[in-house]
Length: 94
Ligand code: SF4
Image 1 (spheres, helix red, strand yellow):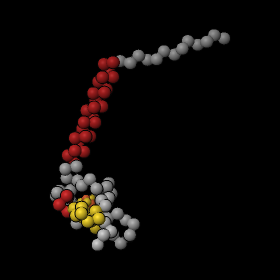
Image 2 (cartoon, rainbow, N blue to C red):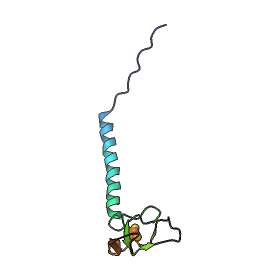
Image 3 (cartoon, protein in one colour):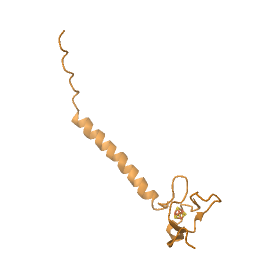
Image 4 (tube, rainbow, N blue to C red):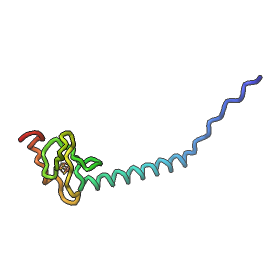
């Protein structure tokens, strides 16, 4: 029985690799630009379920009756959310 010949690795096409990387960078740039734009109107403390993760008081927080629930963010994403912040007042303080 003879040893089979070692498999040859396919040769990379440098031009296709460059085009693929350029396309990937274009996709990442689009994601980054969208995130930058959204962050100008959506509060960074608002999670995907529209719950507030801030550790300070904010006039847009709506506390449910469930003690462990994060407050619901009632901010509209159309107004400047930071005006509602009372960041000198920590949650749990009077
Ligand atoms: S706007 Fe206020 S309530 Fe809404 S996520 Fe931001 S800090 Fe929380």
